[in-house]
Length: 404
Image (tube, rainbow, N blue to C red; front, side, top):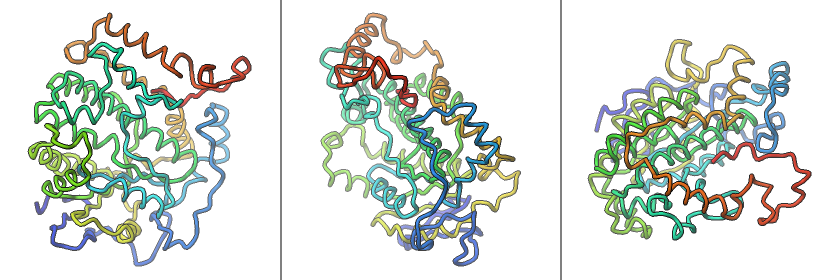
């Protein structure tokens, strides 16, 4: 395992303490400047910044963008903690609890791992998976639980492409939040590590070559619009401990799962370390921790506080997405993430050569008729009287960020 991570961090043997070894990437002791993230203990008080822009309720107009350029309203909200942090790791690594605790310590917004719930549960709380008995077999819902129980089902390909879209959508929301509030974000996994599961599925025969090809065509068509994270934290847990933790938590979908084989779990670990982490570390800072016995968030925060994110020159690939010339560039980037529907349209890539991604007109119409008549699905949010919406005739406000 030694020598796997050569950019930004040296991999620790599992017998060593949790604290990682940074290579020539440490600022002076206890010096916190604009380049360094700071935790609550170091700051001693909550970060203060201008009032946030209400991006969830208010559309970002061209006039507003012009005002923001004139008054430097975008960058005036930024401080040392205006960063994108991603926590990654294998199944059952303990990412969620750690990421949530880390976000609290850094005064950042926590984004839980994206799931198919955001696709199937609408804004009124109705779970569209309840409609499965009425649906044609090929149009029934498919999520992680169903994948774990039937990893060779025809709908695995559609499921994984939808997972890509959910993660992409969430990452746009995270960037919109950062640009509109100045508050940093901590994500439990991100769209960038989604490929780990695609590759593991493909290697284990759960995903066809054609479906994999469609996946990477979508990635090529969409990822250029995003800004990569500042920091990735990887919680390393060996496969034998992953298996023990899966067994202990006894999730019904995971018990005796034909998907969670030793080979599948080993492939996830290998792809994380040999592909994803090597690639993302050419842009982001990378911290790797042995999480076999879990660890202390305070220790991780201390390590984060030592990282100088602004030390790279203009030609370095590190932090390249976050180097902009002027306020106009920052505001243009902000406007991009405020107009989420435009970005989601990049997923409209027609491909008709993968059988498991094609449905018949009859099945599609059956799905559409049932889906569109479900509670809260007939009209936009706020305009469904059967769900208790009122004052419909005088409403002008739209839920413009809800595109899924």
